[in-house]
Image (cartoon, rainbow, N blue to C red; front, side, top):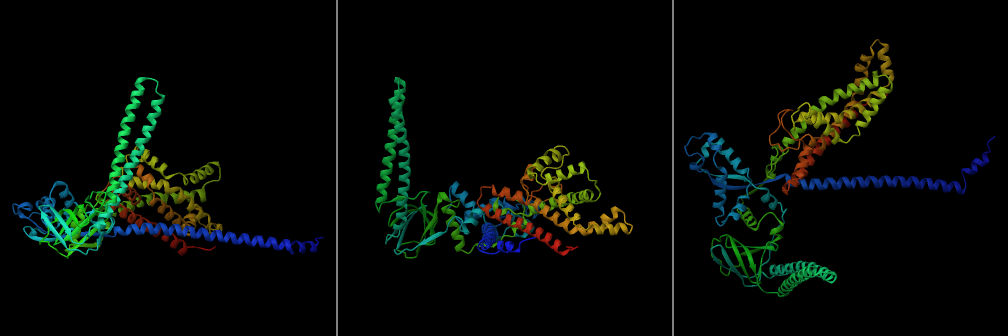
Length: 592
């Protein structure tokens, strides 16, 4: 007989209270750990999305430079045929360059002209050719045309290379122009702050020289020890030669560093502005000047845009300093001046970048779009679904409804489960050797990618379909068979429709996983540069994840924003596919 007094004592008293307190504390800690995990996961998601979305905003706009251009009939259509094919073959690139040279006549020299031509995109000339070929009546006229800006121009206007900072000036400016050079004098020492920055840079140069001197001194010490340990005259001579050479180099570096430090301590004195210094730009009299030498009240400068009027004791002038030195940005000082001049004239238009969603891939970032990759992903998913879904569902029905339970079927089930965990690149190797090497499937085509992804997705669909079929109550089968249906009819007419929501959910999740795969597609060559939009499953194509991979590897900075925007589009597709899976599960869910 159970002693109730002992049981009551076990569940009451101080020891029971301590156990209860410890249990509640453990429950509270478990809840706290769960809350912390949720917040950490949410914080990581917010950080990821904010980083991607913040970078992607740079791809949502594009820049045009509205310029007047004369469609010279002698160059475009000398015979007056007005044939669109003849017009399209004309040298519109040369016409665009001539327009830029006419706009900025001071741009002389090969390197300067190259900087000038880089203001507009290489595709702008083709867009002008399309317009004129479609409207031959424009030949011989002067029109205002929006030239697509290059990635350098676009990034500068988005402040990706730093902003142009205006400094306050108080003195009057006088300018003496001699051809392409000028001397600018301020009555109030307005260049002192810029000179001080240059002086600070001298200290950095001096430190680099002292570091070099320290390295040479280490070499001197090494060869002094080598000389002390040398046993032959030849070794002693070599060591002494090295000591003398390295000592001379060390002393030269130290002397140069001391000279720079002395110059930095002198508040006045003309200094050269090199590419590692912040640029100093002056706007006065309708012209622009780039400083090459600077003192507190005097500047020697190159004339980038010639002034339209004499400048003598003028208070109407502006002084600008860049955020970054010229060597640290892709946009040059000349390009900054030209862009600022066009912006002042109201010739810069920033519009929504529809090209990103309607164009194919391009090596030029301002011309690149994701339509080709999106269409390639669509055709690849069509092939994947058409192969994986019927095969996977049929295999699941057979294994769950008709296959005998023996060692062979157990072996098949184990291998299906193992295939679901195989790294995706293994399927790429299989596709490379089998589909491309044996069957000769077109390389870099949706049909090749679809076959590989179908193999990869098949185990997921089989496992999800078997789980959905297994969830259908046996009474459904028994009722169907009891009413005279064959086992096949019971499975196809009754069990399969009831399991279809779960089957579709698993299929869509597997397809979403396949949509984001990159490694197997790279193995079969879908990383190729494809410009055209694919029209079918046998055309050469790329896919969205591979497009993201390729753009992220390009050196042009403008591709960073386009990579992030492509990631956003890919995430949008994945969210839509998962939302469809949730909808189907909720819409057709059955409770037994």
